[in-house]
Length: 52
Image 1 (cartoon, rainbow, N blue to C red):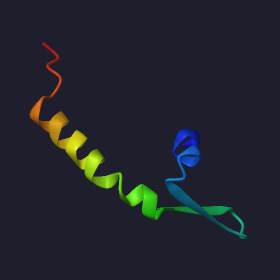
Image 2 (cartoon, helix red, strand yellow):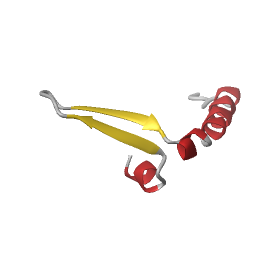
Image 3 (cartoon, one colour):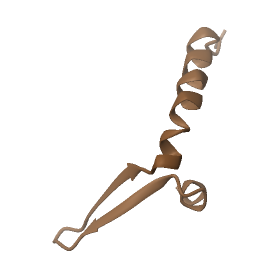
Image 4 (cartoon, rainbow, N blue to C red):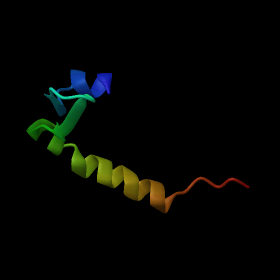
């Protein structure tokens, strides 16, 4: 999460309540990363790890 914060990808919203609540959303910059993540997921499904 620290790396994502450095890249300014997530937006963190804290709610002053008990128990504490924090909500994360993607920034506009973070949303541009979604196609890359989807492509990586597709690659992983196409080439699964063979445990044998």
